[in-house]
Length: 461
Image (cartoon, rainbow, N blue to C red; front, side):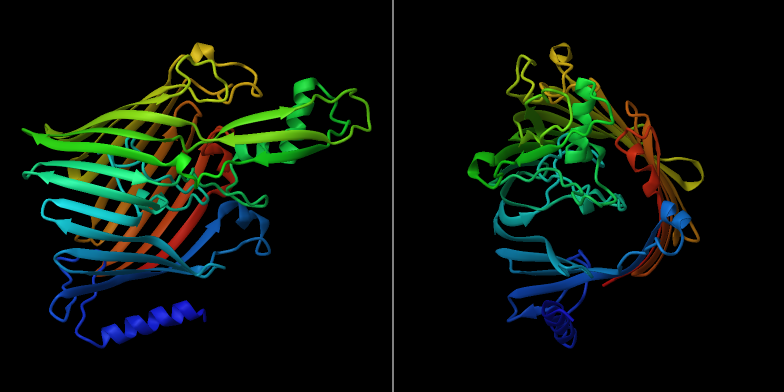
């Protein structure tokens, strides 16, 4: 067994022999004891056994089918006084990296002022999921099998965060992120979750693109020598910062924020010399692919309120890039983004949660048609997503039936997520599935052969 795993198990066992309580993420209800009557320590976590099978693999037979690594877990440590506390949350898995840090940070308390620093996941805005104002942490799309909590998709970032409470209903926040992290995708050439856009930037994809661009017959090979130019996003040049103010006026919760950051989707430029003459044998064509992450300013507002029994939430933001004329193909155009959603208990104990997100590209008429000259060529002016979940509890709330769907309107594709979850005390059993469908060129439709079924047994402590 890996030595760090042994050490963590020994620590857990030794602490359990003392008068320490164990609680998962609930300091108030799991009083963990005191060291020297001044430092409180809490240890919690979960252990899961998971089997996941892909429907397309089942058709290939037992030789192809895999059921995953089965084991996964989390260990959460916190220790603190009335002045400060520290938190370390670890992920455990049976991979080449059996232990990884999910979050690790320290907090200092100075009355109404709170300062924290470290590896952190923060949520800004009021949308339930994927809201336009939640911009601090990029998302991990390297495996699309867990949408149960958007926090699971977030990538923790090193940051400094300060918040100051004004009275009982208002708060001012500021954040500084010294380095940048883009969206994370599966980059393994043989990977199951490699997006189509990344495949198009492979040597095979670039060769096919050049052949189509210049009408070269498919029988003539087009060898390419691709060089990828990626920036060093750890430099201070890619630092980000923002501020946010929230308050309550009457029955409404309001927020106003400003953020300076980098768009997490890369702007890609491709340069090469056309094949001349188009007669075999053609020597390898040097191709340079440059990635960049455009800076932008975001100004946004959000609102939440209970109206006629509906818990309503809305966000609106303007992303202002450096391409104010809309004609710079290496920079994304400015865009307007909005989100509107609500949840409500319906008849027979059924709960509905519905949200619509949309981004609208400005100055769309300035977008070029050549993909070599404009990174947004061929993209729709709008991108609209519907996120809906309907659920009902049975057997004195021990069994939950839930169906969620993510629907991309312009792409005409979807991800359907039905599930049954049985819970008793700190143990749960989940049977769920993920069904990808719609246009095979869409964000979800491209994974039509990755539809899956999953069984998860979890014990929390």
